Length: 615
Image (cartoon, rainbow, N blue to C red):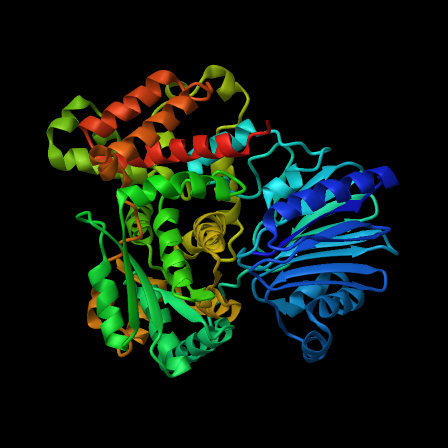
C-alpha cells in the first residue's frame, strides 16, 4: 500500500510544522516503497510515499491533496477531470465546490486528506466500507493524521505510548476495534466517517449510512437479474490489471468471484488456494470442485507448522497495531503464492456473508430472539422461576438445556454475541492484574459494538447484526487482515462483493431474503443456483481457520515459540500468572483447538509489543 500522513495546523507555530514534517517524513518512509514527498501550506504539511496502491498527490492553488486508493466519481465533470488531470486534482475541485460534501460524489476504497491553506481548514476521510484506514491525534498545536497508527504515534507530540485500554480491547476482540487504537491519544475513523477541521475546531461525523429500506415494488426475478448484473459489473470494475487472480477457499463467495472473473475476462482465471494437513480444517477439495466447474487454473499450497513458525514474527511485526486473527497466516501464504506466480492483483470474496446473511450466528441468534415472542407473563411468571428454582434442574437434561437457552436469550443483542468470548467466560478479576483493571474500562468493547448496532437504519435484528459486522468483522478484522498480508506479499487486493452498489443493493433486500427461518443467505444462493456448483451451494459455512492449537501439541518448534512468547507476556503483569498457567494446562488436557485461540492471541500481542515498543 501507499502511505499518507501529515499535520494540520490549528494553532501551532512554524517550529511545530517543522517538527511535524520531520516526524511524518520518517514515519512515511518506513512504509513507502519510494522516498516520501513532503508539501506544505499555511494549513500544515502533507507527506506521501508511493507503494502498491494508486496514490495521487497534488497542490491545486491553496489546496494540498493526497488521495490513496481508487475512486469512482459520481459526477461526469469530476470523472473527466480525474481522467485528464488526475485524481488529486479532481478531489481538489470537488472540495473547492462542495466542501466536505464532496465525499457524496466519491465511491470506491480510498483514504483522503485535504489541507486548505487559505482558510486553515482540512478534511480527512475514508471510504464507506472502511477498506482503507485513517488515524488522527490532536497534538503539537494541530491534528496529526496518517493511514497507520504508527505514523501518527511517531510524532513527538503524540508519542508511542501503548494504551492499556488498547491492550484490553485487543485481548477482548482479537484486534483493536475502531475508534480506539493501541496508542494513547490516537484514534481511527470508522467506515464512512470524516474528520473536518475548521480553524481551531474539529469534529468527526458520518457522511453516509447504509439504507435498509426495502424496495417493495420490485419482483423477485427483477432483483435476481439486477444482482447478477451488479456482480458482473463489480468484478469488471475490480479488474485493474491483466496480472490478476482470485483467492479461492472453496466457499460461496470466493467461488462466485472466481467464476465471475473467468466469465468477464473470457479466459480461465488463475485461482490460489491454501490447505492444511489437519482433519476438520482442510477445504481444498471444495476449492478443486469450483476450479473444475469453471475451468480455472488452480494453484495450491499446503501450509505447514514450519511455515507458521517462520511467519509468526513477520506477520506480528507487519501490522501497525496488534492483530490476533490466526487466518492471517494462510492468507499471507496464499497471496505469496500468487505473487510468486507473477500476479499483481488478487480478487477476494470478503463481504458476502456480512451483506447477504451467511454467518451461522445470524441463524443462532434468531433462535434466541424467538424467546421474546413468548408472552411476558409466561416468561417471568412461569418459565424463569421454574428453571432457576434449584440445583435439581441440572439433573434433567432437557431442563438444563432450557435454562441455558433462557439465560442466553435474556441477554440483549449485541451483547449476546460475546457469550463465548474468553473474557466473558471468567471473572475479569481472575484474569487480570488489579492495577491493570483499575486503569481500563472493561465495558468499552461492548459499548463500541452497541453504538454500531443501534446506529443501524433498521429495526430488524438480522440487519442490525449485519451492520455491526460491516464494522467489526470486516473493517476492524478481515479487511485489515487481507490488506496487510497482501501488502506484505507484494500484491494488491480488491473486494468486488464490497462494491458500494452491491452493498446498497443488499440493503434493499428484506431480512427474510438474508436469513429465511434458519437458512442462511437464501437469496444469494438461489440467485446463483445455475452458476455455482451444487456442492458449493450446499456447503456449510467453514471459515479459513489455522489448526494452531492442534499443531502446537505436535510440533516442538511451534510449541517453543508459543510458550516463549506467552511467558514473556506473563512477565509484563497485565494478566495474572495463574490465568495464563491455567490456559496452557487447559490446552494440553481438554480442548486444544479452543484454548489454542487465546494462546495465539496472547502470543501475537507479545510479538507485536516486542517489535514495536519504543527503545
